[in-house]
Image 1: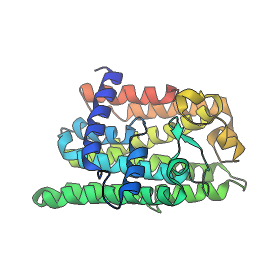
Image 2 (image 1 turned 30 degrees about the vertical axis):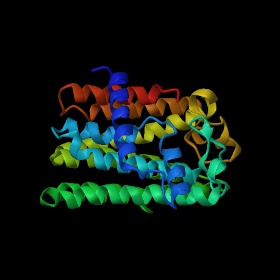
Image 3 (image 1 turned 60 degrees about the horizontal axis):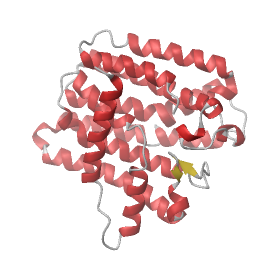
Length: 297
């Protein structure tokens, strides 16, 4: 299995289904729906929904069953980016090479666009659960995992500590909390949700959790690294914003070389967690772990 080909195939599939699922630009809500779709289709790797689909396949499930949850995770992720970019938070002008949502639609509509995406995510999952109520047990478990990872004990909690740590001194414990909650939580939830929907057993779920935690942390550390050495055109945003905003990052605490060593260790840990699985889908996850450590955008 060629990793890039599979990522492209699944990205196209996710975007096709996302276009069908998001509200259409019409009616008195036209402005906010247009803003929602602007950020939802502004680019991006679609990593989280792809992880849902592939982890479902890895344990023998059907990606059609996992698609609503994959779409929901992309909506949640996109809403978080819209809010992250706001002047009251990271105050960024560009995201994925395009003006951020509030730069195009204004702060009020941007906030509501994020709110709209978050609510649409829950509507999408609940609709699928109610339409398949006789098989809803694993869907409800997946829904719960995603909801918790998105909330105050997950992504939002990490964002809060990230904001509070900008002007204060920070240590390893604080940094681990931020990374494990703000970024890693949704990535881990993506893999666990897919595994649950695919019918993973207890040991498989344990290994999927280990994999998700490892790549989630390595993904954020690589982001920290790219903020120093990355290319603005490839990243689609300004370089050095973490440093100028005095944000707590792995690089600012440990330096570039140690950060790179940490991602390599996490990559090996992720790959080792896959040893109970077999087939092409196992190879996909192995190649993905290596790709995330070396990516340049």
